[in-house]
Image (cartoon, rainbow, N blue to C red; front, side, top):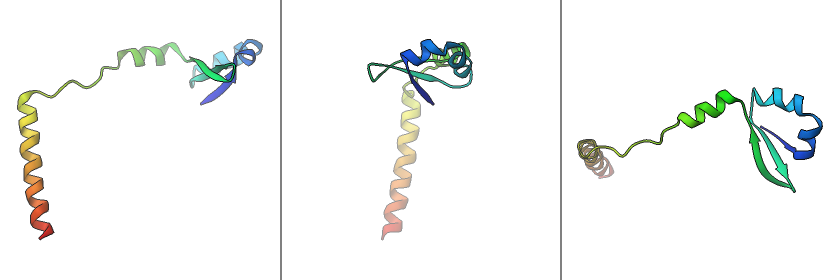
Length: 79
């Protein structure tokens, strides 16, 4: 990850443009992160991200049963 100032970006746009094709470039303004320059491919990949969905009631029941089995096993081992 590279962090530069806005003034540095203005002075060397071509260099940081090419760098952003390989990795994100963080640009600061008045000492604070302001924007991130990144490739269009990376941007599209991030836009496609979908957070995990809530498990179905059936899946929740299955997980609960498995947890209970493990809890019982752990209790036996602790004795």
